[in-house]
Structures are given as C-alpha cells and as structure tokens.
Length: 338
Image 1 (cartoon, rainbow, N blue to C red):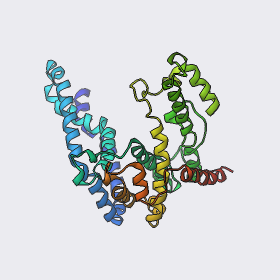
Image 2 (image 1 turned 90 degrees about the vertical axis):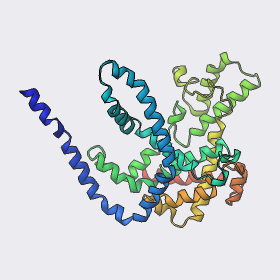
Image 3 (image 1 turned 45 degrees about the vertical axis):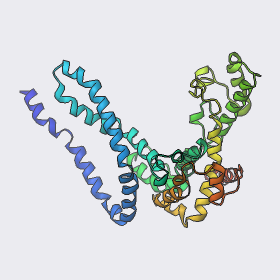
C-alpha cells in the first residue's frame, strides 16, 4: 500500500522546485524586455552562430554514450532506458563542457568566412589565444564593474553566507594577492613568477646546465627564490603540470605573452568603445565581443601577433600597459581593505 502511494506521489516530488524556478523566470522577464536588443544579439552570437558546433558535438557525444551503455543496459533488459540516459547525461553532466565549447566557438566563429578551410583560419599564435582567455577571465571577469552587476545575483543565491559582505569586500577577496604553490591557482600578480621559473628551468635543461634528476631540487630552490614558498612534495611542485610530460617544451611563456597582450588589447578596446566599463557593469558584453571579432578574431592567422597589435593601434609588445593596469587596480583594492 505504502509502495503504491509512494509511486503515485513520486511525480509531485519536484513540483516545488519547478514552481520556484518558474516564478524566478517570470520575475526576471522585465530584464529581457528592457534589454531585448542585447538579448537578441547574444542569442545570435551564442546560439545561431555556433549551432553547427553544438549539434556536431552533441551528436558525437550522444552516439558514444549510446554505444558504450547500450550493450550493458541490454544485458539487463533495460535498453529502453538508453534514450533517458543519453538525455540526462547530455543536459546535466555535459552541460558545462558544451558551454565551454560554445565559448571557444565564439572566438572560432569570428574568423572571416573567406579564410575558412584555409591555413589562415587558425589563430595567430598561442599567445594571442591566451590573451583572450586572460582578457575575458581576468580583465573582465575579475573587474569591479563585472561584480557590481553579478554580485547581487550571487548574494541572492547565497543570502546567509554573503549577508554581511558587500561588493567591495567580495571584489577585494576575489583579487587577493598571495604567493602559492600551484600555478593554476595563482593570483594574476604572482602568476607570471610561476611562468618565469618554468622558462628558466626549460632553458637550463635544453642547454644541458641542468639534468632531469636535479629538476625537483632546482624547482624548489626557484620557488623559494621567486615566491617565498617551498612545496612539500613533487605533486605540488615539479610534477603539477602536464606540459613537460607531453613534450610541450617552450609552451609556458605563451601564458605571459598572452597576459601582456591582453592588457594592450583591452586598453585599446576601452579607448574605442565609449562607456565600456558601464556596459560591463550592466552585464552587456556584446559590443566588446563584436570589437574583438572585428579586430582580432576575423583575421585568423593572416597576421602575426605583432602585426595584430599594430593594426589596432597598439605599440609593440610591452609590459607597460599590464604593469599600469596592476598598479591602478591594486592601488584601489588596497584602499578598500583599509
């Protein structure tokens, strides 16, 4: 009896969540109406322009999941669950991966159509690719303007945890500068010190001033010299990256090259786009994306990195704009903590 009752009530188990989600959507419809032109632009850029990529990836992943699980489910007489399994895995588990594909495609789809299927369709360099990662993730995603818009939404989701934390305090915490052992967890100020260490060690290895056997000791000494911290084991030290094990010698400097280029490119974009900071503060990124597509992405590898910088009015590659950006940003953050 109780089992039967449980089966009858099972479909109602998620009603509360669905109603709450529906009401939240209704409560935010006025944002869509007010920014309908921007919403339409983003639907076009993030939807229609990359639809072919999403369909191809979704079809490929769905086919692999079906093949790998179909035989096993058939053994237990559950072959009718294959469709449900594929749908759930694609929507729930593969959602973040598909999102990453869409964002990557937003750059790739910006390459001019006439360069398609030619050697010029790729990016200018790994440094230019990295410049876009750093521009969006750091210069936009960790900016005060960005969080002025998105922090209220975050606090709505975590009202208890963030009740006593205002946007300035959160912004300062998100940009804390502290030497760390792991490169991918490093703040933007100390990040390049990790790259310098790896580049110095690569040069010593290639010029036979250092042997592989002595690499862990040299790594630890370099970490102490550059960052003032020493790893307790090689997993947190010399073995933390995959680059050397897969033969990607000389790859690390592209991260710092990209960091420097990102500051120069963003400085130029701010000069060309009136009110860019205000747009970011309003959660509007379309004009910045269009500017990047027109000035960077569409050219593929038609120009070298230096030529791209020159074409948009930047000086030759220089650390100056990045250093000025860091001094300005963290000078303000220092006052927030006082």
